[in-house]
Image 1 (cartoon, rainbow, N blue to C red):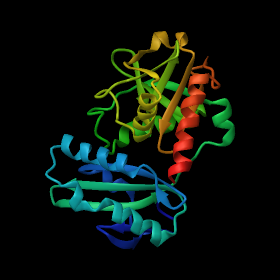
Image 2 (image 1 turned 135 degrees about the horizontal axis):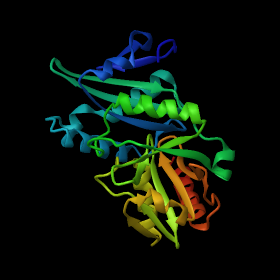
Image 3 (image 1 turned 120 degrees about the vertical axis):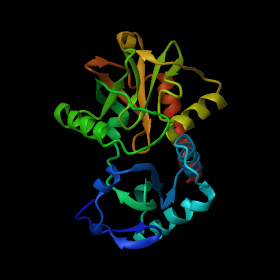
Image 4 (image 1 turned 60 degrees about the horizontal axis):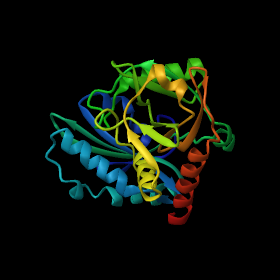
Length: 268
């Protein structure tokens, strides 16, 4: 963040973000949401707010979500910075001295059109989020996966838990496809991603088969296709996991992608 010439909101007051470093969030508990701005509006905001409320409650915090007026603060930053497209981070930092709110733009990396057509490469690592359902700052996990992303030159790192099952990505959820059925790890093993939720809704509306279960790593070669969901990738095919190839053009995957992007263009 340092060096970017942008304004941010600190406890709803505009400040120059050069006065701020994300390192401060490593002290205390920091619950956050990353919201996607598309055509000047936050997409599927209600999903973010529901997840933020879930994180607050699972952390046993006595905070009323409505009293935070998150939507107003996000829109204030959008107007202040004239944001047409990008990602905004909303952070609640809880320390012994009180609660602080931060709202600011973060660097985003949206997949190129080619990635949606041909899929992306991923690798796995053995790591788990503690309290997976709460979206909190976990600098250790982030630093480790960032290093792997750089060293291996891949789009995402998929996490393998103590039972040798793939649960989610370092910053995404993951789905597998086999025999015209989608498989994804259930709560409480994963963060309840907003794009994940949207995909599950689409499957329910279109009567597509979904089984919520963890996929064992030793079985992944038996699946025909795989994809990740998240704020930046939305719905993105996987070409390879640890060199194992998947079909980025699988008909069921194409249907889910088409429905998701259709929903996006119609609503925003």
